[in-house]
Length: 140
Image 1 (cartoon, rainbow, N blue to C red):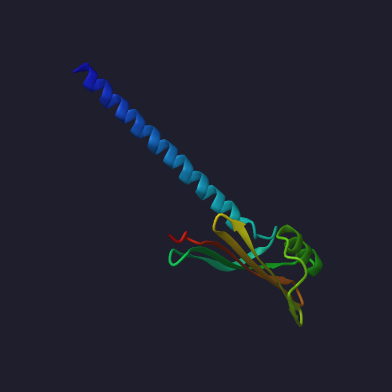
Image 2: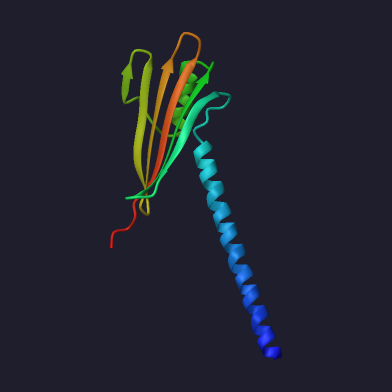
């Protein structure tokens, strides 16, 4: 009888430990995704709107698209995005707008794509940012 009680207590402790580890892991993943999603927020810019799309098939994809407006000078905004995300020189320019983009493989099946369209207006700057994280499921 005492041996059965000890076994039951041990199973309960192991179950609680498992759920604790799972909760910490999920919390860490959620925190990491939150930090990554907020990384494109230009300091002091007004968020005009955006959305986050998640797709699970045929590959796992999280795509965040958002628009911002700021009164900072054009070159300051351009330098912030260019250096922070290693976007380099613009890949396309049209009138007062430039497009900076990159696509890179992160490893272990993860890819990242990012583009920033920066447009100068008479009163301020507008930024249209799209950032995508792709996980390619292993093929067996």
